[in-house]
Image 1: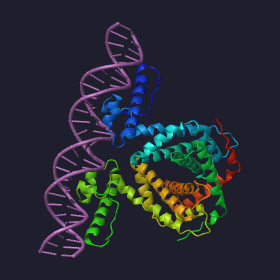
Image 2: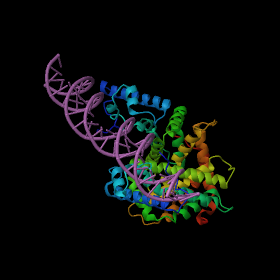
Image 3: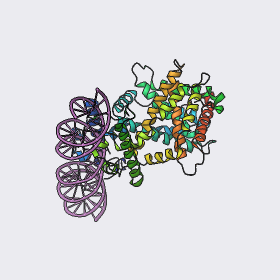
Image 4: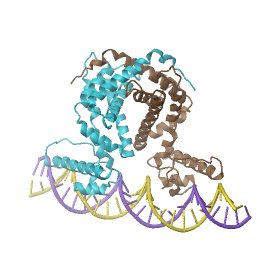
Length: 214
Length: 214
DNA sequence: CAAGTAGCTTGCACTCAGTGCAATAATCAA
DNA sequence: TTGATTATTGCACTGAGTGCAAGCTACTTG
């Protein structure tokens, strides 16, 4: 099987346009059916039928049923990473990611984000892969941070900063999907970063003598 | 199908002993084959054959092939949570989890941990589910923290602390598996918590005026 | 425009994961 | 010992995912 994922060079031409169109039809059909009857209860044959393609052709566009949803939140890591690379000289790593995360998330339509997130939650397998994709984003951010700040004082520092950033996104998204939440994604992110800073700084005084209890 | 997961009440009796024994045989067979030829290349029939059971019986013990590995790192969340609930009155949340995490991880055989971790890394599906299980642990810790510290000043605070704790474990485990790493898991965890504190505290000064660049 | 090439689509046949059902065998409790 | 539980197994089935080869469609070059 040839590997999907590489949306090719031409960008114009009937062939490429058709391909994009087919991909979009599959995505639409998939989401429509997922919302309607659940992810696990939807079969590939149904998606293929609604998209007007054969079962076999589906696999030329997505590796699996789940990838339809997963593909929707790809690219976010790279968007944040790009902003990190362009961070001003004065910024500290954590401030840079904070700014990059918030600026990026401000551009994302929140309603779609919540809808997709809720859908993903309904299938354990998809949920698992979503978590894994967060780890991918974490690595992407870490790479960008290392590019921007070579030779950090501590080996783990930048990786931890990346982890915290992704964690903030994860929690803010989760909170956004909760019933009765009226704050925006950006507000929730600000809150998450502020809370983290307070909580960690508060513990700084005595964290070298970690009390181990039984 | 009856649900597995519930290792029952009797604890003695021939039936229960046999069940434990069968489960152990399946686990051994699975790991043996996974190491030998890879997770994805190992079929259920092979595992069942080596464990001396039928294919059908396998599913009375594990939900899937992957669960053999996943089950090995279950329980860690609950162990840490238990220590959190027993944390002294003086401790701050972050200090408490730090102590609980380190005390718990100190008890885990590091060689096994690294071996399992490396094995899991070879299968994307298993890797994804491992990340998902970390999120489960995160929720377990969060629940314990809320029990110990009801009414936190900020809604997200304890969840963030739980997130940081799991993140530290994740990074330390990862580092432990790297070639040439000579520090112990506990040392790596101490390092992770220290680094986090320094990095976050350093950014505290100006994090209220998050610089957003384009 | 003609013809060849490269890429897309499809059907077919296959392997493997996972589940429901029903029959049989082993254990347990009285 | 006997009746109730629980474990084991085979069988048949659905659905995911892949390799292969044939046919079709768009692109390119002369």
